[in-house]
Every structure is written in C-alpha cells, then in structure tokens.
Length: 402
Image (cartoon, rainbow, N blue to C red; front, side, top):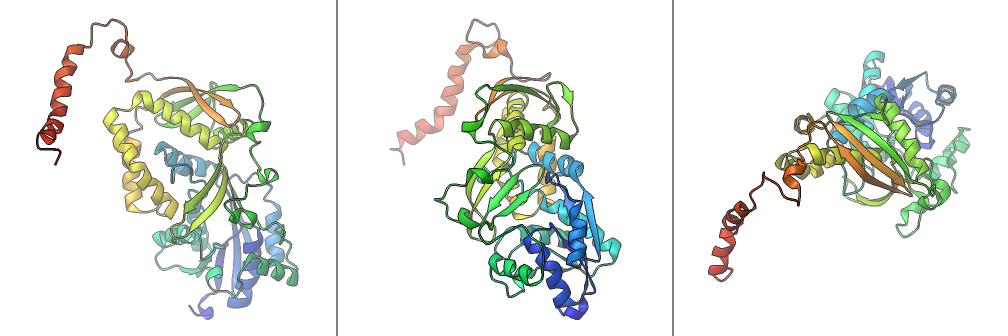
C-alpha cells in the first residue's frame, strides 16, 4: 500500500521491544499519526507508565482498556466449557487473547477514524494470523500494517540496536531476549536459549509458579462449584470470572501447578518451542472434567470430545470469529446445560488430583453400578448384548479374517 494512504494508525501496543520500535518506525515510514492501544488482560503489572512511555516514543494518544472481566467471561470461559486443549497439553492462553485484543483495537480505529491498524507479530508466528483474521472479520476494508513483514530489521538484536540509536527505553537485552506474553490465563515464554528444545528453562524465568520441588510439603484441598459449565465459587465463596481465575492462579502457583514445555506445530508450518504457566486454567480444566464425568450422557461426551481437537485448532489458528467456531460453540454450550455441581481437588507439588465430585443431576446411580446385590440390573441380559455385538466379528472370522 502507498505510504500516502495512511494518515492515522492504531497500534496494538505493549510497551515492549517490538511495539516501542514500531511507533517510531510507523512515523518515519508513513509519516502518520500513531495511536497506541494496550489491552489490560490481567498482565499483573502496572500499566499506568505505558501512557507516558508511548507518548515519549511518539504516540499522539494512548488507550488502555480494562478488559479483564470480558476476557474471562466471554473468551476464557467459553473455551473452558469446550475443554479446548491444543496438541494434548496447551491450554491456548495466548491464542484466546488475540481476538479480544483485535476487537477492541478495531473499535478504537472506528472511533478515531483511523485508516489502518498495526501489530507487532512476526512473519513467522501465529499471532499475525490471529490478529489479521479478526481485523478482516470485523471490517474487510481495513488496512493492516505488519512491520515485521515489511521492515529491514532481521532480528530482535537489530531492534535493540535501533532503540539505542533512538533513545527508546526497553527492558529486553541482547543477553536475555525472551519473548514473554502474560495475561489472566497464562504466561508464555519463547526465544533466546529456549529455541534449543534440549535446553531446560531457567527456574528464575517463571513468574507465577514455584517449582514442584519447592512447593509446600502439605497438600491443599479445595472445592470448586460449577453452574451450567462455568465455575462460580471456590470453597463456597462466589467470585466473578476474572477474580476466580486470579484466585486459582495464586493457589495453583503456590503448589507448582500448570507448567508446560511444548514443541508445537504453528499454523504457518514450522515447529516452535514454548514454555507455559497456566495454574488456574489447569485446575479448572481438571475440575470441569470431574463434573462432566457425572453429568454428561456417554454419547454426548464422546461426540463432544471428538470435536475438541477441531475446536482447539480453530482457536490456535485464529478463527474465533469464524462461523464454524460459533456453530461449534453453540453445540459445546448445549452440552453444558446440566454441568452443575462441585469438584473437590487436591493440589500437591505440581499435581491436581480429583478427590470427589457431586452433582444435583448426576447420571451416576450407585444402585445400578454397585458390585453388591441389586434389584435393578439383570446381569443375564448382558449375554445377548455381547452376542449381538460380536456377530460381525464372528462373520469376519468365518471367512478367514478377510
């Protein structure tokens, strides 16, 4: 696109290395006004300094939007209701944040009459896809500036040199060039020494969890109450969605819960090594499964579980605002209507163990399941059930197994 077409841009701004450089680069390259926007998604840090920092770097205006409760209620909780896990272990903490960040960014762009939006995602990663699919789903005509795909910088070391030349204060250094993403649900780390999948992460790197070895020697037992698939209380005390996750982050972090070391498959085709801390989300995932084990019909549970990999891939790849995700969410939520009850969990040295579960509409009937004498289940009837199900296997055997 022509640089003359861009008069005003809204930048998704974190105050980190990349986006600090981008403010200067946009002004130099496009000669445009740059509005910095930061979403407060529970980063756990004071964001007030960002306004001054962004303005000193060249932003004409700064928006800091508190989206914590919206993030928890409308993004994290729907994802948890679907039990979304990517490639077996990743609870999608970064992926689920991007559509909300983009949505608010587009609202600001409309309010400000901006020509374009910009982000700091690299041309190698998933976030560029997540941001831009969201932008275009909301406004197909919006212009998008992705500096990492356009500028001449080749590495974060180049960016660090640029900040020195332009007197831009940043925390990243050439010795510790971690890429860190933190929000209410998780903290992720990549880059630097973590790019070697044989190298263990440094213990000092972790921000929200202690190591399991350093966790208390005494276990903590908690109870989490659910209503229609959503967690609403801990140990009988009601919490808002965001405050509930914050509380479980605290408890889980104390007990070393939620660390993941993953080599994952990015949407753009390459593999990437990431380290994640998701203490509260890990606890909620286990608790939710415990309530579902009592309340979901077998075939509903199995059908839903068969669709989890597709749902998780939609989120990971950036299709939150797609019709297929919305359709699948409707089905996931339909299955949650009876998922009400309480899960009792033990937190101990990195583990979450189910110690009990109960539900007012439980499908578990001890008088049927018991190994003791009962008057409900006629065991003799199982013989016909087995023979009918074995019929096709017998026919195959009769023809030599062909």
